[in-house]
Image (tube, rainbow, N blue to C red):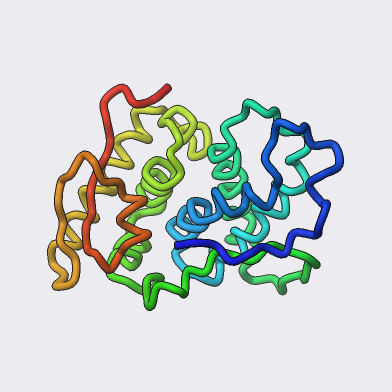
Length: 211
C-alpha cells in the first residue's frame, strides 16, 4: 500500500523547519499508510477514516515546524489521528466544511475490496476499547502507557484490551473461509491489514515491550 502524491502546497514545510527534519511531503509518504490503517481501524468506515486522515496531516503540517527533530514522528502522528478520529465521530451529524489543499489519503482502493474485507469487518465489530487498543498498539506502535493516556485507565488495562481484541479477531476469523489465522511472532497485525488478501493474522505482543 502506498499513498498517492499529496497536495501539500509547495514550500509549505520550509519556513521554520530545521534542516535536520525531512520534508513534510516525505513524512506523509513514509507514515501515511500507518496513519491510514489506524484511522480505518478506529473509525470502522472508509469515509470517516479518510476525513480523519486528511485532518491529521493538515494539523501535522501546521505543527511540524515546532516538532523537535528527535521526536517519534509516527507516535506523534498517531496521537493526532486519535484526536481527529474523536472529532470525526462528534461531527458525523454536521455538514463538513471544505478545507483547501488537504493531502490526499493513501490509495487504499488500489487493493480491491481491502477496506471491505473480513478482517476489517471483524476489527469494526470489536468493542470500542479493544478496537482502539489494537489499532494504537499493533498498527500505530504505541507503548501501552501511551495508549492508556489516550484511552484512560492503566497500561495493564490497555494491554488486556489489546490482547482481548486479538483473541476475538482470531476466534472470528477462524470461522471465515478466506482468512487463515496463525500465531507467528515475526509478522504483525499491521502487515496483516495491509496484505489482507494473504489471509495471515498474527499477534506480536512482547512482554516488556513498553519503553
